[in-house]
Image (cartoon, helix red, strand yellow):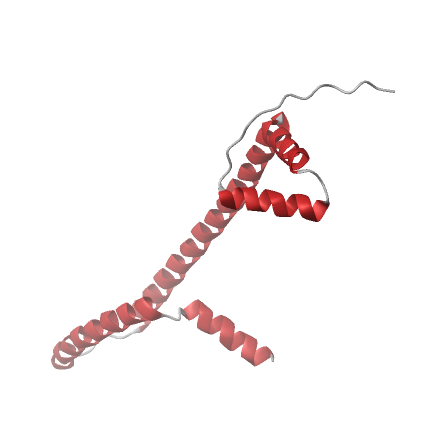
Length: 142
């Protein structure tokens, strides 16, 4: 027979909610509360606990890094798309004769102000264009 080690007794003050959780858990497991508390303390103090936390944090940081990389790529693609479109539009749009050009510039100012106001409203309450495209694409497949 293996001799049992004598256990030291401690007094611990627990928050009532924590005490209720401990009591419920011990009752469900049909184990003494002191055994559950001892296991929890041993787990908390285990050198592996710090390594597990570090591994979990490293995994989360890796996920965040991949997301940031993807977002940087997506923003770069969006900027390039807009730049190519603007360059194409400027190259292919013929200039207007001067009397019509002045009227077009005045109308362009009005349209630009309306565009900025519409953009502000859209950004404030959505949905974003990418969402609409995804929703339209999903409806087209269905």
